[in-house]
Image (cartoon, rainbow, N blue to C red; front, top):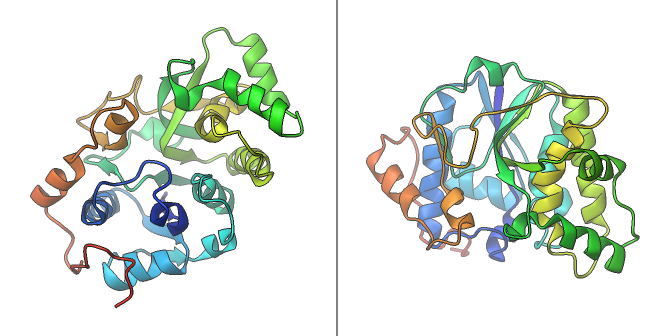
Length: 278
């Protein structure tokens, strides 16, 4: 099975999404995430754009088995839709895969039940107005007020017939059912490509929340989760952005962990501001 990362540099440079306090910390996290995962997968791949390949491969020295610059296709897209890079990468996969965020650290291999799953994700998360990144009602109102009013039928089905509604965190995501994963990514990207004004609440709801809604439709594609709640399974893995989503100060955990871990040989030091022209 292949481990995959994606890095669309435009949102990072514009500080959209969950930004890092320091560029140096961000790069340490890449070294640790890739170095740990390489031990557990047959091959590793990066989907990025030209600037991302220059930074992570040419300058940082990360050694991927496959590097794609297909995210150049997102040039000109709104960086507020930072998850476009991930969705584009999901849809491109031609073999079973696990996509890892660059702040996910796998200290041990994923369990066999996940490595053989049709669809896998990190953990369930609450869907409610108390969690603004999953405020589904605000998302639906925004689509009706600012978009074409069309809500995917799988979304409507899930909202109507499933009483205990959860979203699936996609810090870790993938599986063997590539047709389904491609359909999910295509559906979410179609909504985002419309560039509807005033629909910021859709950001996380349509990216991660719709995964479970699509997964529990009438096709009954099984979704397997690594953890039962945010923060579970810490002896196996760590997703550093969990703390930032809980409105805590930006965590220095990746930097501390990366500094104390054994870094893969061949990685090179880079300037603190990696996108500055030299």
